[in-house]
Image (tube, rainbow over all chains, first blue to last red; front, side, top):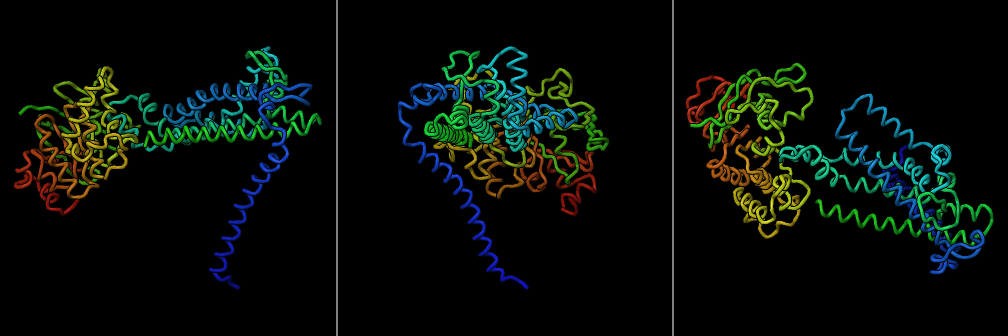
Amino acid sequence: MRINPRFADKLVKIALNGQAFFTVWILVAIVAVICVKGLPYVNLEFIFSSPVDMGRHGGIFSTIIGTVLLVILSIFVATPLGVGTAIFLTEYTKESVFTKIIRFGVESLAGIPSILYGLFGFIFFVIKLRMGWSLLAGVFTITIMILPTIIRTSEEAIKAVPRNLRIVSYSLSATKWETVTKVVLPSAAPGILTGIMLSIGRAVGETAAVIFTMGSSLRLPTSLMESGRTMAVHFYILAREGISMQKAYATALVLVLSILFINIIAYYIMNRVVSKYS
Amino acid sequence: MNVKIRIEGLKVSFEGKEILKGLSIDVFKNKITGFMGPAGSGKSTLISVINRMIDFEDNAVVEGKVLIDGQNILGDKIDAVQLRRRVGTVFAVPTPLPRSIYDNIGYGPRLKRGNHRRELRTLVVESLKKAFLWDEVKDRLDTSALKLSGGQQQRLCLARTLALTPEIILLDEPCSGLDPISTAKIEEALDELKKDYTIILVSNNTKQIARITDHAAFFYMGTLIEYGPTEKVFTNPSEKHTEDYIQGKFG
């Protein structure tokens, strides 16, 4: 028996619509639950005052600062490393056993569960290098964790830059480095930024790797060698230990909003870059 | 007539396959020299040796000499990056860099340190005028070069090359993708430019070679078959092969 092609077409359309709707619906549902449960407890005081009594009372200011510091510092360490590696792999080496090994390593790193990064960071940075539970140990651990994403996305973005543009740049008396910085990187910037955004998202939401390395101190970290707590870790501890579900949802809401905020800013920067180079 | 480029016994091979089989040719100063020949004749490879863009081809082996003003540019002492300021190139496919018209022309000059803003502006304007593009873009130098038409883009590429203040301009089939009007504008520009530059035009379009070049060279399978004043090559070729090619019997 043959199905009427028109009917099949309609059926597929309905099915695809349904799938798209389902995906969006899950997202909306999560955000809605967090909003409904968290919104009543979020106010300026919650954002700008520090936690009291393990977070049962007070706000989450120190965890916001902890999150911001961890994420910004990790991105600052990981981006030059990751983009540099990507430039090396694409522009400065030929395909060889060596590059294959690096790529294999990068891909393997990307697949490791974050708890293992946490354990590695704990054993290596916290214990072996005697950093203790500290912002610095957290930054290094998160850096290692997000490097594969930045390297992979940067590499893809750099590879997608047409060869013609490089040839033209060379023919206009540019050196390799000038070509990379003036032509290749600006053209690849949107792709690289996507990788950085994904990494920020991962870092902001990470708990396992952070709790083992940066610790979970509720005090405001004032130096790289001090322990601190991120919003994600705070949420986890509040919910897990049943300290305060209200505060937990309020924290989650701030977390979600800040990710949204970061995305908007990243898109803004991306558009600026794209419009300058097109 | 002064010789600007003297090529002596130039051999180029890729992985053992010989593309140029011992070429020798003199290119004269302030003339347009046309290189023609069917695909695979080695004319584009020859171009890429003169501007040392062949350096970016893996596995290319180059032997022989290319003398510009008597200096062998294949020698160890030559900095290929500096050489490309003296030998500008326009490629077959118009390739504006993704930035404004002004920044496209300014790309080469800005790479050289010590270019002042006002000097750069003059250079950009002059280059656009020489490429016969100024009148069409003078009001929108800050708009993206990608918004120009194909023919305008190719003249932009010519202007961008001129802004390097080169001595030699190599054009590798610059009109292959252009309409007749755009082609005419490029040809008009080249005719003016030969007063100040030595120009090599690679083209598959024998009519174009006949129209605008002073000397014409016919290549076949990596060897130079015939070379002489354009009029002589086209009206009274000494080789049967050249005659067949010009008359369109093959190629």
